[in-house]
Image 1 (cartoon, rainbow, N blue to C red):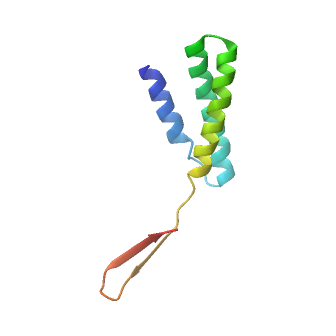
Image 2 (image 1 turned 180 degrees about the vertical axis):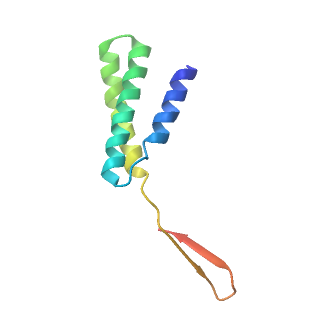
Image 3 (image 1 turned 90 degrees about the vertical axis):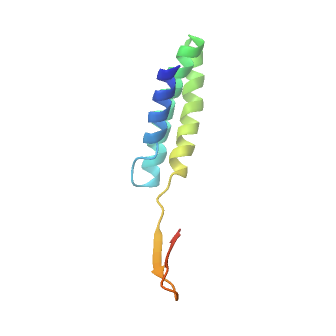
Amino acid sequence: MKKILMVSTVALALAGCGSPQADRTLAGAALGGLTGAAIGGLAIGTGGGAAAGAAIGALGGAAIGAASGQRYYRCYIDYYGRDICRVY
């Protein structure tokens, strides 16, 4: 169980890698699909379980990869001398 959690954590962390959004989405789908296939195959012990895990993992990985977009910051100093930063 610990191995599955560690692999899932690494896959989720790597799902957001890549600069354009399409790269992040594809990388997330690939990592999620591989992780889901491994978990489904180990949990059920059949090819059908691996296929179902791959499909679910690919959808989840693609969603996470697409949602992890770049954020832009705009910082300025207001009238009172405070630093104000906003995320877009």
